[in-house]
Image (cartoon, rainbow, N blue to C red; front, side, top):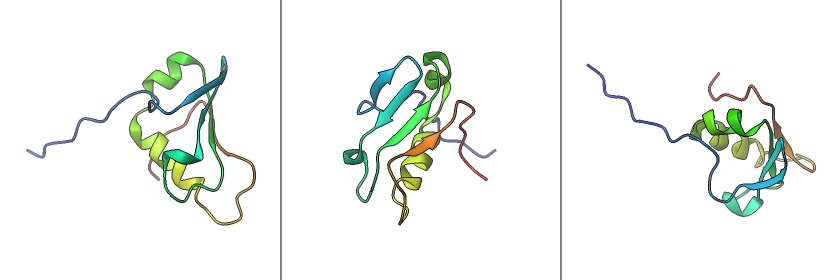
Length: 80
């Protein structure tokens, strides 16, 4: 049987709460981020997001030409 790595839930410690439904991950979180990442979700949804979501949105923030923010909506998930 294949063993799966348990994924961490909730935002990383560097996340900054902007308001009740907006959380920002600063550019210092990952090398190469051009803009901060912003997640639009309430606290309950944020707590249920796993580390893959935060990894994926911060990867988006490294793309060339991105302006102001990389946004992730409340239904954020990682993968294809």
